[in-house]
Image (tube, rainbow, N blue to C red):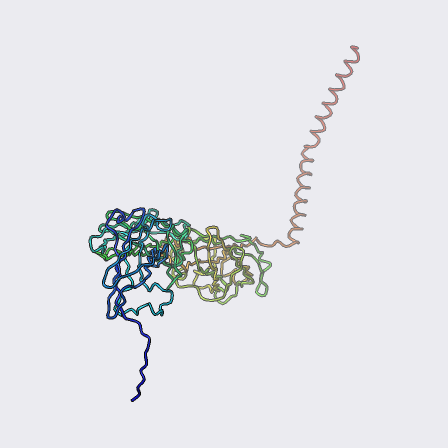
Length: 538
């Protein structure tokens, strides 16, 4: 064995305990102008030094949005004695950052070795069970001796400008005003917050004071409003919100605005900490179609038609669609039926069509009419069948002997109340001898018909209102009369002249013209005699 000994430097291990309390004086009030605290420390341990230099630090922090913000701090150097408790008093005046106890203020105390270098040989080592820090609320919470606040928050949300049963007409352009009331019916509520969940595309017109909006999650934005703190018993806090509804689409049925309220205390009855307002949407949208024929009446002569010849007419049928109501229409379609054949005879064809809405073109294709349009046409056909026109032969798509060509036009969106659409159809009509004979030489009424259908939004329309969706345009083709041959006209003229000569000769023989001359001679003779008598007198 070696006869040498090794000495190793070592530091004693001590157990330190520090406690913090508020001083029992007027500064305990939550609205005092200064805060007063007492920090007490004590240490013990085997081979512990008789004295121990320490630093005691007091730190005050504001709790805002559940985060800590350091406002003020103070550090003192003190000397502790073994197994003896030593207390230091701290008086901290309120400053602008700590105002009216709007937010909870937390005070923390910390004890450390009085030397900057904690490894200094005069710095004992702290036992793991040492309590070197302590913290508490900087002022009394008025929640009993345990300072555990049992709150009872209630929330309500209402609107003063929605229609009955919280209904809103899409497209009205009206902002919705909400009133949120948060009431506390028990012990003070510290750090009370209202969490407001607003689904897209509804947005806040202006963010209220003391509120912040978080990034959107699952198409819902969350706005957190910090209420007055503390919210005392039987006190109510009001939040006013203005919502922009202009981006609501006409396909929406409802939107739900949710509100949750929380605080830093324990809730007595959490069931009434949340409330919601469901806004139901109404649609005020419809379309009306009108039309006219550019050239209502055309005529033909029988001589222009025979078994091998026909006469052609070119005319336009113009349909105009007007928007009714304030709700935007996202999608609509126009169905037009144009007669092209009567029995086995081709009578017309579409040579051109041109559609536009608010100055922009839309597309049309040849296809079948919609089921809704056909059902409406059938009802119109049944009602029209009771009316007969003795002098008119109708060629329309309600006639079972007529074959029609169907146009479907995807008109598009009517987003403004002033939106209007137009469709101009150019028709080549052919009148032939077989058609005229089938018409029994009556006036022919050529009729096209159109039906406008609102696809989006899905609007329930009764049959009476559907009449605005239907329009017929007619063009009349009539016989101008029979053609008189030129020889007959010449012979009639000669016959008239011959009759005139015979009449004149007869009158001459009867003395008609002589009597006139005799009367004229008598008148002249009388005038001459009167003239001579006047000259003699003179």
